[in-house]
Image: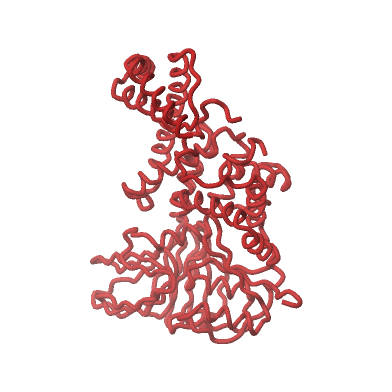
Length: 346
Length: 173
């Protein structure tokens, strides 16, 4: 049946002897796997899949085979490893090979990375002077008396010298209350997009995907995009603005609710559900997303960050939604929480 | 079963005593490295031992050459993969570079995935890696490869059938 000396025979023979998996169960397991990787997985699909697994021991064995192999391949699951794997496995000489790994460096240093890469960065020792893990917040007083609150999943370097006090924000968000410096050194926060110079002040700096956002609560902050010759702009107390490498956007009124995290809360006043979940996911460590059909529902209230699972439960109850946890295979996401409308009769 | 195992064992012992030296020299000519030749000769016999049916051999050296050629092809493929891997690693920014231990594990895992996907048409393999490594959904893979979502699903079924169930599902399923 099999060809006389297939490479695969040798490996199959090393597995513990067990009854072969019936081809029909194998075929169905593969179909479930593919169905579960679709963009939108209906709750009925997940239920159907669970039901199928429970229906017969052969089904469960077929599924366990997939799980076992995925387990062996799991070292490839982190974003950096996945990029290395993609580059290694791309056809020899293809430009793709170079692009994938080169893309990593760009993503890292231009701050244009996706959620997953930032997630990885926040988990590894990457030499930042101060770091917080997902769900962790930290208060730090610097040698000059300035006080920092580091938000969840953030990292920064301290570079104080005789001539300046410089923070390099590498990920996340920091809320700063500067102290007057005896030596009169300027206080600067450097971001990939440029720097923000404190002019005696209380302010926050947050890295977004391709911009930095600064909100000023006392004093003033001067925003200086990194491009030489770009127009700088001074924000006054009560103002906030985003800036890119090239320019500063028009200032908006500062939203003090945005820094409620420093007190351990998210404060929402009619916030879109999608935005609320994006905010909450910074503290949860998992990727939270929602069905487009419910993205525009409004969320209001004060939610403690200490227990994000409870927050999701509360939301689900008050908005009549359903929370599903979907475990991805050895791809980028390991856990996905989404909110979907509760099905009729469920 | 036990009888055929016994026969297989005997056959391999005979092959080994008569042809091991010859096989090593044959491999050495291909590789130009006597240590590697010794390793691969060993691998060739290990591969025979892993079989569960008796061998039917009329031409022992032709038979050994066929098996050794597979071992050799595998060896070169691993070498190629390792080179590609080192090239990829060299481009990773230092801040993100994996530790020594991670590197070794990663390379072994790459050998394994490469072996599991061996022989799949390039677009099928790419579609599978895109979903599994990049977490792309069907629509995204379809856009990247310039094919329909239906085709992507067919690719993924084919790749997953081989990757997970090569022993029970026919090739090209």
